[in-house]
Image 1 (cartoon, rainbow over the protein chains, first blue to last red):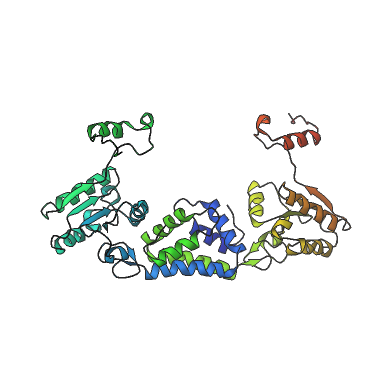
Image 2: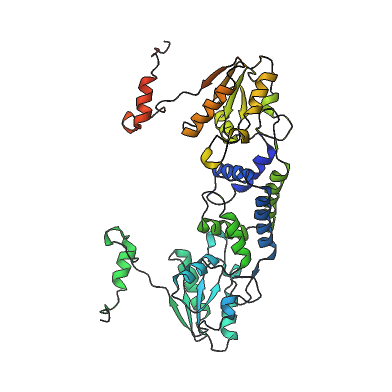
Length: 206
Length: 206
């Protein structure tokens, strides 16, 4: 696509670096910005610059935070004996949205992936081990809430070995067919594993 | 969605003002930005700030331009007797991409739409009339390339009346079933009109 202006070209170029945004969408977004008041662009770029400059990570759990220790880690309402280990901040938000979990988190900041050159030392794994040790028995269980992929399994395995002498229970989120899922459309591995890992059927309390 | 940080919340808020970007996509984009180098955010916001501050519009055709008169208006290779009237800069790029047009443009900057409070005075219509008059007969034809909607038709009608005493030919882009379109799936209005406005079938030169 040929642009009538270098300024437009540069802005489109920058927008299209985002995942899922191609040249056409980028142009649409840029032209949208041009149609709005100048202030709106300023507010937009200031918000991003502010974010990038002032963003901090909780020293306890590595979640994004405006303060040194995040609001989840300082909350008195949360179960302090439980730590849910997740890959990313995305996952914290997703789990918080379920309203089913009331413990703390530990954000690894990624997942062990030799293909992408990410080893255990690039992740917040040692700090998890130190955190468990430093709390002197307060942490009783860690829940590994990682993706059900090769990388996720490798990471779970590595962490489990690392904390094996710390006297904490290690659990992982349940795998099986999703709620609302139809057997017919479930892949073989999930279906096969969900038969092997079947659980007792409890009648709902009436 | 509850965010662990005001900075994130503000950035997501700003991103989700763009058309087609919801809260979830906005969060994905913001987290992507956080994973990249700081420089990338700076380059991105600088490109947008630059664009918004320094953008200029061609004084002749109102297309986006880095110079006072745009490269199309100054080009000696373009047919100067033809002006294609379009709604937006989008349309200029779309028509340029076809490589089928070699005349000049006139960007209205919108379309007459009483519903959205856009009247003829908000658009670059008077400047089109002045431009035709000022060229002393150089402009021989204007092509109305506006959307085939009620607003587009209203705008075409208004412009045609405005230039009726200027001695220019007024044409409009062809309407009918699109190339590759199947009759079965063409809507009734398009099909009906394309029968009424049928054209002579010329055998291709062999």
